[in-house]
Image (cartoon, rainbow, N blue to C red; front, side, top):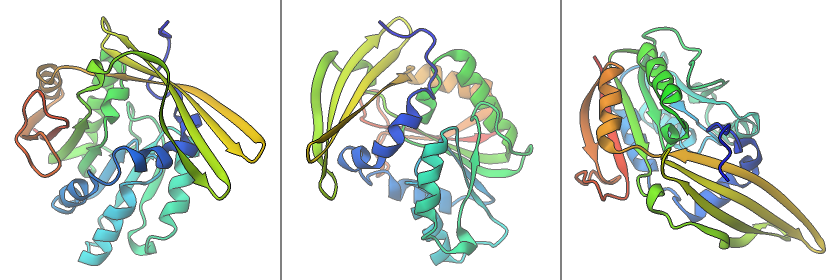
Length: 267
């Protein structure tokens, strides 16, 4: 059964050790150039919601270093998960100090950013789908709108195919080398709560090093809304949609596109 009390941030602390390993085998770097370009074309400081392990922050900051970005401009990442942020800090130590992003631990539904301070906010790779009810989504959108200056950019990346994933139990979608002498097997189950628009992943990572075997279990929950409802909520929160894409190379948006990208401006 679906845990009716689950929140979108549940499970991410336990996921942190495996996030980069799995991501490299699924999304990879397909979205990186899009977000580097988008962040580079905006003015003012940029905030990434749910920055995780710094997968996007690192290439964006290196791009700023090469382009000689305004020293008054800041790149900021926020995440609720301390284990994710710990990995981000280690990754970002390799970034030049002058453009090294600031990391904040906090809730995207109540951003600790002053009103009108930001030039852009990025919600990449389905971050808004971790808002598992209307209340959470509206709070996050309101917090982003408050933090952006007038005309500031809000970039959103959604994973639209989650509701059509088949349900299954105990499937092994990924296995492979994790570190020297260590292998990982992901044993995954997927459930759908179609009434609430939720897709629930029960994850079990089996880590084997020689004869030593460890297991890490957690659950991730995502909510997917039709694009019409997303656009209506953006309008209600004070945004004007500027562009919609169906791929990271700027392909036209359509309902069956594998990626839904929305760029909106604060009115």
